[in-house]
Image: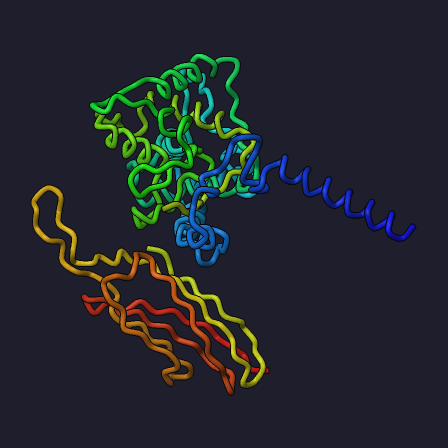
Length: 264
Length: 107
């Protein structure tokens, strides 16, 4: 009898283990067949991300937090004046952007929204793309959504732009005549020279890249990828890249926002 | 850019060994890169010395060299016999000092 009970316990344990394997051996970093870039990193790189203290990208988060309450511009306002506590007001932003903006009749991403706020509501100068300020603020805002599953809206008015982003993703470009999908959809886990290819999920951006030795935006990554296939990169914040950003958000649906992630 | 980050217990037992972690923001230019446009070498600009003192007495120091990455992270162990201030100093090639302070109570 006792033996039978043990057997039963064993069987249950096996079933539980089986269930875990189905949900993905990577826990929260895997949803169905979608795997965060985190799962393609070496242990050493993952350890840096796991420890908020060791993660150098937290320097940018801290700077962003400081800027959040810094008054700037002619209106004498800080982000905080309208949005108050970022932990509350910015909770979903990182998981849902880019979104359709009726006033410009196209998509707007986080960097552009921050600059829109600065120029239209704060009367301040727009921050330059990849400047420390814009990176810090973007990282800080997106960090508030850490752990929230990616859930960008791709229906309604955003659908048209989603389709454009998808087309961009599948379109061959550059002298090497390669599309995003040729690496990130067909060969994740394979190698591109010494680099392990990931699925190219966007849930950790802006991310601290060891190669860059600093935090960088998703559009910087796009430009790097485009250059690698010897195509002329588009400008940071161009419509092409913002549409692509929406498609990538949809591709990463369900994966947790990891900002600020650490990648090699 | 940002202030250095320091993590150490604020109170410890007398003689207890504890860990101090710190991270400082610095570009750590190795001196081995060239400017892409002009081809001129970019001069070396790294933190070459790190010193930790407790109540003015040196407890840990390190000489750093060009292979250390940007935004260097450092962790070390120490112990304290009495309450006091832990002072961390990073000195770069220009001679500029970045300092951080943390009070530790021995109870």
